[in-house]
Image (cartoon, rainbow, N blue to C red; front, side, top):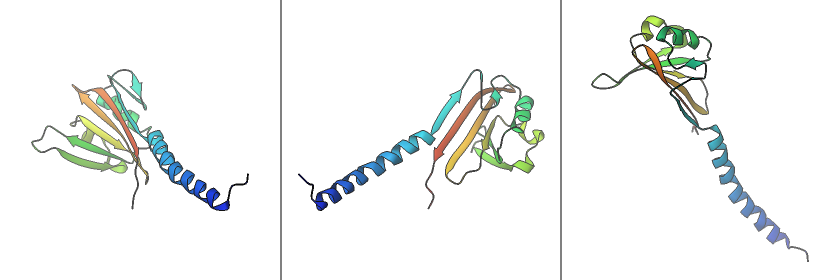
Length: 132
């Protein structure tokens, strides 16, 4: 028995309507990373490394800016350094560095947290974004 053309059209529409959200959700999940590291190494950085050693490792990344985060202020402050402005003198007094990586469709960063001049946490965040 042959399926009428209208039934084929409706079947195609139903498949299309359900397939698009599934593809979007699966793609979003594949591009999303939330990863915290407290021991060992990840993304070119090693837990326990000094700020100077970590600063040296930054030069081997493709970071285009570093956000210096000052949570110890009464109102948390942020200072943004572009790649050409990054110096150890500016970084050494701050305990949270967030390296950002350029992309128009991804939020992509690595946060480095220090305590007593040693790297204690490496947090990676990557997420697809939809821009207008």
